Every structure is written in C-alpha cells, then in structure tokens.
Image (cartoon, rainbow, N blue to C red; front, side, top):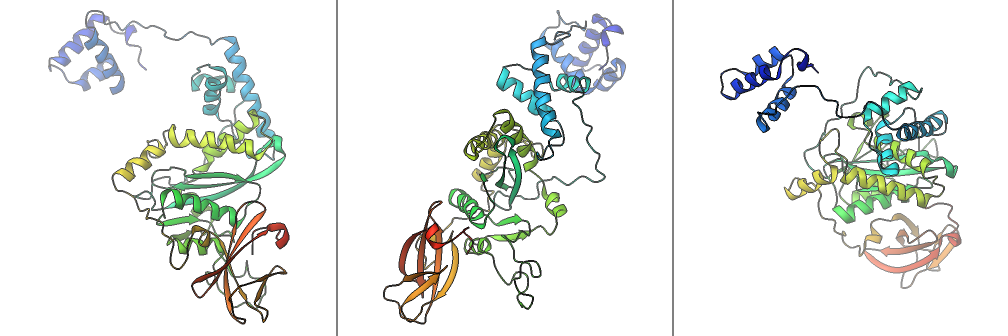
Length: 420
C-alpha cells in the first residue's frame, strides 16, 4: 500500500478529491498520481466526504506492535498440538490449519488474533509446512442448477479421535448446488444398513433427489470380476443390484458412479475442510467415545451449514439451500410409499426371498418361521428392517399382500452384520 503521507500534503490530496467530486478530474488520473488502487481511493474518498475539514493522510498505527505474551503463548500451545497430530502417521493430518487456530483462540480463550499474526508466529517457531503445488487443480465449480439435482454421498474411514484408539466411518451426504450437508454421522463400521439409514434420513426430511453421486464400492454397485463369488457366474456389472441400490430404485433416484478417485475429486472434495476441523476438535476435547465424537461432528456441521460462507458459492450453505427452495429451484420430489407396500419399513429395508416348504415354513440363517395362511411351494418376499442394534422386524409379502410380521433378536438369527 502506498505511503501517501510521505509524498503529498493533506491539502494536496484534499484538493484532488474536491476536484473529483466537482467532476473536474477523473478517478484514474488521481489513482495514478497518488500511486494507489481503486479500493484505497474510495476508502480515502469516504473519509474526505465524511469529514472534509478534519481529513488527514498522516499515518497512524491502529494496532499495537506486539501482541500480549499470553496470546502468543496460546498460539504456540495450539500449534504444538497440531504438530504432534501431524507427526502421528495414524492421524490423517498433513498440514497446519491456521484458520482453525484463529477460531480456536476466539472460542476457547476469547482472544482475537489476525490470521497473518498466527502464520508469522508459525514460521518463526517452526510450525510451518509448505503446501505442495499441484500441476492441475480440480474444478470446484457448482455443476448443478437446482437443489436435489445431485447429492454427493461419501464415506471416510479414519482415526477421527486418537484418544479413542478406534477408527470410525464418517458417512455424509452433500447437496451439490447449495453445498448444504443434510446428513453426517459416525459409524463404528461401514455397512449397507448405515448407508440405507443415511438415504432414509435425507428422503424423509427433504424428499427424493434426482440423483446420487457415489463411488463403485460394493455396497453401491456390483462389479463383475470383483464381487462375484464363483468364476462361472454369468452375471455382468449392473445386472445384480446391491441392497442400497434397490432402495434407491424404489425412491426413483438415479445413481451416478465415479469410475475413479480422480473423477470423484473433479466434482469436489467438500469434506476435507470439515474432516480437518473434526479431527483437531476431537484431539482438543480428548474424545474417547463415538457418542462424544458425534457431538463434535454435530457442532462442526452446524457451523459449516449455518455460519460458514462457502468458498465456491460465496454463500452460507443452508441459506443458499433455503433460498433455492423458496424460488422453486429444486428437483427434490415428494417421497410416497409405492404400492402395495404399507410403510417406510418396507422400502428402507433389506430384501430377500425364500421358498415355503411343505410345513409352511421359511428358513433364514437356520432359523425357521411358520407363516399363517400360506400354501407350501410358494416364493415369499421378505423385507428385513433393523429396529435397533438388537431387534429386527421381518415383514413377509406374498403376491402383493403382507401375510405376516415377526420380530426376532439379531443374536438369535445368528447375524454378525446386517448383510443378508
């Protein structure tokens, strides 16, 4: 920034602004003469208009030369915590996050410090790692025109809370147009049921989106050669629908697959910022349980959705989502239970079929179930809905009619997971 006070007097500058306001001289000439940019020109012009008589260009230092020692100690303390985490190969952190340090100082210590001050201290005390330059950056443009046009669905398995000693799976769903995240949850293990629950949550709350963007994990897509059990299996890719995809089809949602990690990155990696902050917060709060970790996640989701201006859209995600909905720029459609089914438990469920034996029974995992008013030698469609961690509801359908409902403990059924 040009130091005008060393080259011009107050009266010279005041005369130039006076002539500008009287339209005797154009702005470009004044900027070139004073050696200033457009933003500084209008800032000085505003000062002159507000107080022509008291206008002065004399240099005044607004902030003190040094920050208080206690503030500097807290900066070093927080940077050291990050440094220890970066050194730990089990923690997915590679760089310092100075913006997080700034927010942390304000929240935990009630101390306001500029980002430049933190970076200066970081470089001075060896808390600085230069970022690697990428030859080609990913395109982070918004690729959609409507909310609900594309939901990015992802799962990340990491050591989110080092004090817990366990890796958790973070499942998230993000609307591409608004960057709003309607779903985020920690799971101890990734499973088809966890992803079905995520889909159910978004659909029940917002409706059915036009499409979901996912990778080619076996939960989302059967790939011949990778997922087949026997070499002679004649099924080809997309001829066998995994459980999650069957639910998607019932909701009339189109799946779009990223065929490589690079392709998924081209849409955006919106979770990096969120994940980075979650890990740092879990470290500082000494998170040891998944319930505590979920509270940290909820707080970060609230900040991201309702307070943080997104770098791509320039808007707060939830406000952009809400405004688009109010303007009718939405491809979410109302969820209705397709006939002949009766409840959401028939849709957001696992599906399997069994043959009724001569004793009017069907067998699941070596456990027999007798069905009422069902003739032998018929094929029964079964919808399996886990009610909680220990209880499962089985809904038996025959020719478009619910013929029986039974509940059984997961342990009794002999299931180690919800995969049927």
